[in-house]
Length: 368
Image 1 (cartoon, rainbow, N blue to C red):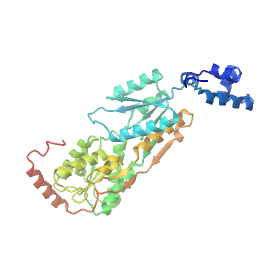
Image 2: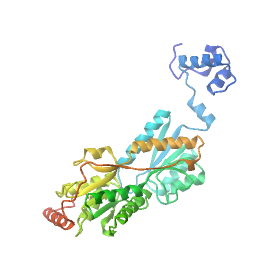
Image 3: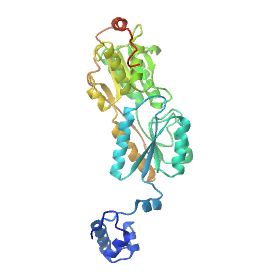
């Protein structure tokens, strides 16, 4: 039979085999009251004819759309987020393997975010949501829990109970980062972080402080700089910390984007990253390997995380208890060339940078 795939109907299959349409339907829906011989004949005809059940009819029957949703917060002038781009790619790859679709929506405010959720749920556009960049008090999580609508969070909120989530142990990772820098000989260690309403940013700051405490190093508030989560923020954070009278000799950055900005600042003012100033990031983004120098980073594969969260949401949709789907993973340190032992004291580093800044007529003209 010469027909285009997708144009074959269930009636065609029934006529080809010589059985009733209902018999074909029962085989396709895995009923067991059909003889094995008939079942094999029907399945062979389905394959030979290229019959594909109507996705619309199948989804109406199951009450499913075979589409997952993710709403990306893109306001606050933060620009593109390289981690989220990799994360969404991981989701899309996993769903493609399962024959499912991903609906991506952006939002510019908290109010708009909730309105988008309400609209997509009311119109039955998606079966469930993936929530990322979770906040300490996250209105998306609160609303979805209130509506009893399926979702999985990439990251936790201040209260991580009663919903499915996948996260990295941020506190342990950043405490390990401080201890690694100390093992290289750094005792004055700066932290470039993000806005503290984001739960991961709060956790990473806490991990930095825990690392200092575990080593008996004093906590100096002036060694912390919180910035927008992009390269511009990293540039500004590096400038703020390295311009101190006693600057840090190492910068631990909450994301690779911040670390890249810090490296740009060092390059602009002639500081050798990895010797004059150590810089460590977090995310394991592929671009870090191709920086000059290549970026030392804690690796959390964004693509793997996206795929893992997508599969978790499928489990939720299939009826698994969301509270049984809570996973905490650990990031791994990938050492490259942007970290090393200090070659100058904080005072000597301050003198070098002060001279370099004085030689620049407009030091803030680029990168800020």
